[in-house]
Length: 334
Image 1 (cartoon, rainbow, N blue to C red):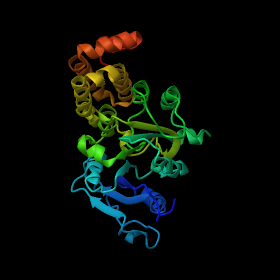
Image 2 (cartoon, one colour):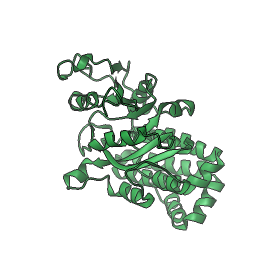
Image 3 (tube, one colour):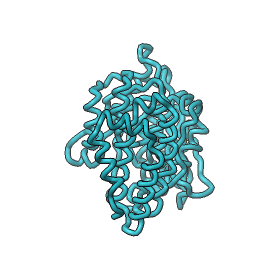
Image 4 (cartoon, rainbow, N blue to C red):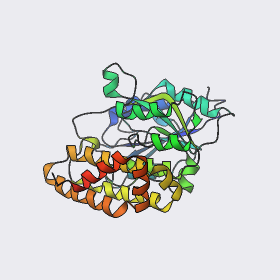
């Protein structure tokens, strides 16, 4: 695919905070991709700023007209950065990406597939990634917890429409923002956004996309590498009070499910499984002083927001899941 005949136009929105090195590595990749028509970098008040004047890009790159540099007036997190970046998107498709991740050749192959006339219309297309921890172990794949969901839907490299049952399985993957190519108009007409909280801001984006989409494609292509740092100041390493803000996102998700009979029929058990897995993961890394408050908020959310139709349907499909739910609700604060 060349820049002169590329039929697929993709905007890439990149939130960044104090990661100039990541941008130096990533931006040349994006600028070399003929299908990328916009690169929107949203600096979440980095110090020093992450902009064309302060990062060491290859000569001439900083003047590329595809680059759009934005900066938040206060540090508000990646969710706010993605939301204001989306407002600047004019391309028909958009990919949210992280500054410290990299593209893999599979993305260009996927874009070529999506550009073919025979490819079905879609609201978004899911693809796989490689987790840096698995690559270090010599495996080109996501984490095993995600890979088993990919295995369960048995898709191929060629993007195909997901059935309702396949969507109900693949929605259980981790709620990442950078494993989907979205149709920009879908996000706008469905008013889909990230939650403007410091962590877990991508949970709402993932789930409302699944709940509101009518046409979901999936491809097994590995299109990017996600880097995981087990230590440091990344938001994924946070273990404090900001984790309690996750319920802001979960309230939106569960309200969507409860209000939509199709969503209840499709995602009832998947949502409960997701909530329980998420709560367990948060509690396992949370500072001790925040565990009891989080545990209480989790109990309250599950008791007050899971409607009877949701629980009843989930119980019919997966009795073991409901037993797990009951054990959590009967558990004492850690």
